[in-house]
Length: 232
Image (cartoon, rainbow, N blue to C red; front, side):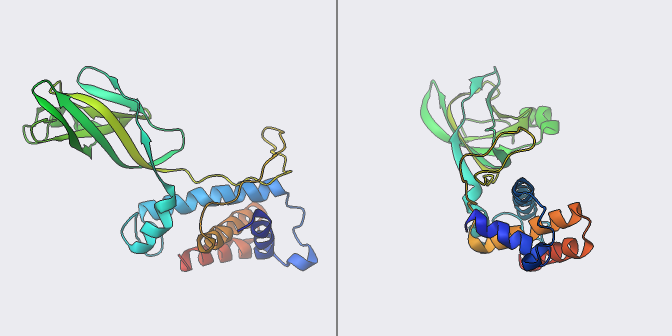
């Protein structure tokens, strides 16, 4: 769907496009509301706080809707004695999995099964015979801390390579000619929304709800919120 169509639809949802009511809303406000709505929609679907209470990959619809945000990227990791650490990407939104290959002097490299663990349980996991990192069983765990992925080895093996699969932030739309009030810079390129048209329709309702709240229009706020969730 073109950004021009998105803008028209959002203004239409606010109130009577033909009469030019609320036509003083600037293009950057539409863009900001739509980009905010994208993030809110994605977080709600991933966490399962939508109307049907489905999180990511809990139904074919969620798999289909959210697959565009799944991304795999090589994780540059460094040896930190008993674990390997690498930074999460700047567009990181939510964990999915990490794949690693480990090696040891006695054996060929092997793919490890890596579980995401809580930082609070770190010391207990490293001491637990059934849960601590094991090259023999090809299992270990990782934690997230300070925007870094830490894959633990307990000194038993080395991590040769790692790939992080994660949900990224939705790509922000940009409308050519809009001036960003935060930077004062005019947008020179047009960036379209990456979601399917049916999802864009839901995000449009969400964006109209955000703008309705900003302009203290209770009807538009409640209508946009209810429509976005009812059709989710």
